[in-house]
Length: 334
Image (cartoon, rainbow, N blue to C red):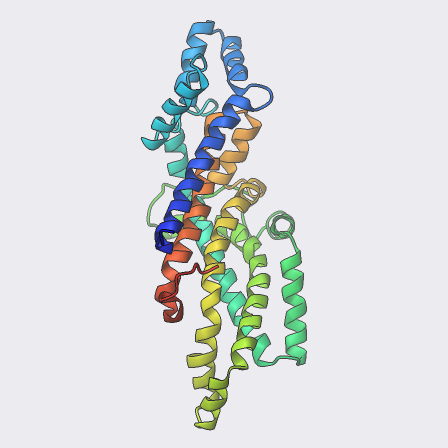
């Protein structure tokens, strides 16, 4: 049996998953109940277009010719995807690639800060819980972590919106940037962008609950290792032991969790951005669902799925560089 390097195997799995996602989006268009292509043709005909012109526009917007046989249409669809052509949005009358390109940075801005803050809180709290294992602080913080991990982020988002935006007026009730200001590197504009993103970011701190429990378990496992007893016998200080030995080894498994959570947050952005009317890729994807804008819906689905797949691939390929113990092993990080 041929022994294939696990890195090539993981890259192959990523390519296969990406192909499967794009193929699934094609199948959705052709096989979805309600016939999306027929619905689009009818929508255009109701706007006064003749049937032939309506079919031409559907072919252009979906990157699929509705009159072609499925095998030929599938090949054409895959070629368009490979060229970065996701079709034209029916509702916004614009290229799907352009819509996603202007929405994606806003989503990345929120998700990157939400991921950083939630993991910083989770790791810090988890380390405190492990250090005082069994004490009152551990019991209290564990209860807090379980509570945070049990609350769906959209419930917290709605609560924050009601109290901190509508009742107290501390933050804007929606949008992604201040109105009436020209975009630029000015303090009023930057502070306005931060205030609009504050509540969506705070809503995602529920992920810190799960992260703190994971960090607590890792730290407790490391605290029981023999080399820490040796370090104490050598007279090393608690600060040196906790920072150079415990935290360093306990935080490594959290790296994979961090990258996986990025993918999960991308999926959660569909609901989160709708709650705050934050026009990122999730907002456009759900809006496309309401408007039956299939090209935009499929484009958002493909981009979010590829983000998850690539995050998992990066976690596998880079973990060995962070943890030398795993570098020589032919195994994935999860």
